Amino acid sequence: MIRIVIIENQYLYREGVVSVFRDNPDIRVTGEADTIDGLFETLATTPADMVIIGANTPEIIGVVYIARIVKRDYPNVKILAVSNHFTLKSLMCMAQAGIEGYMVKKFASPVEMEKAIREIAKGEIYCGVIN
Image 1: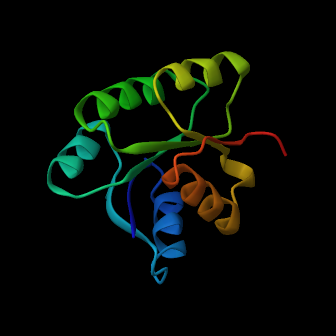
Image 2: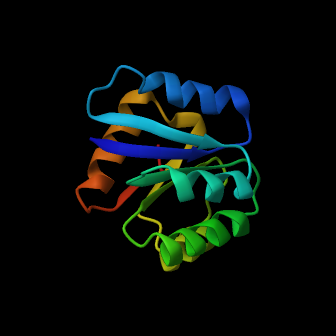
């Protein structure tokens, strides 16, 4: 089973991701947070194989900050970033921070998100930023 923790400040989007995987036997959302502090409180007490980071602004610096701390404190946890604001520069910064996957939020269907999660869990890099 792939255990997911999601950080997303938009409640409806976060709940949508949770509901997509609610009945999935192989992918389970084991925790959720709407703030950075909440994410690290959740990771301290909840087993996770992957963190999905939802980003809602063009400033990817928050995603990079979160990724660096996750990679430092939880080196085996993989990261999928989901945003509408990818640029080549932001993708390079996220790759340097150790993020294994990227998706464009407005094109992220449940099928595509599941595909990304499975590929990343197998150790592959997923880049779904071009549609």
